[in-house]
Amino acid sequence: MNLLQVGFSLLGLLWCIGSIAALAALLTWRERAATFAARTRRLLAVVLPCATLLLASVLWTLLHVMLLWGQSGPAVAVR
Image (cartoon, rainbow, N blue to C red; front, side, top):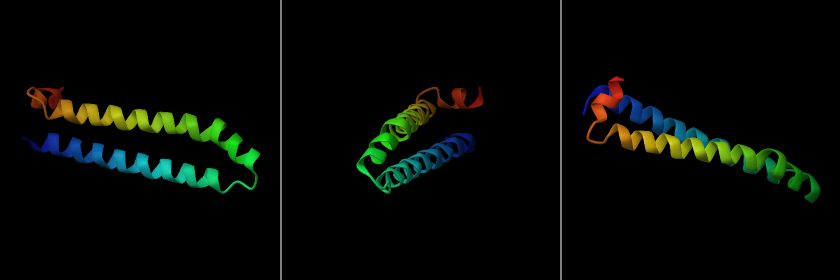
């Protein structure tokens, strides 16, 4: 375990927390639309594409944090 691994892990954790907070803000913004049609339009045009990107980035981050702490983790961190 070295300081670089810990730093990247904390950065990944911060990214995941920020992504989940952004997803919560998007869902709240969608619910505040005045009509059902506006909520549906916001869902299809903004929330679903952004949620896909945010959740994909969370999975990508978690995968790379797991790779970082694997057998060859210090070599991955230095590259």
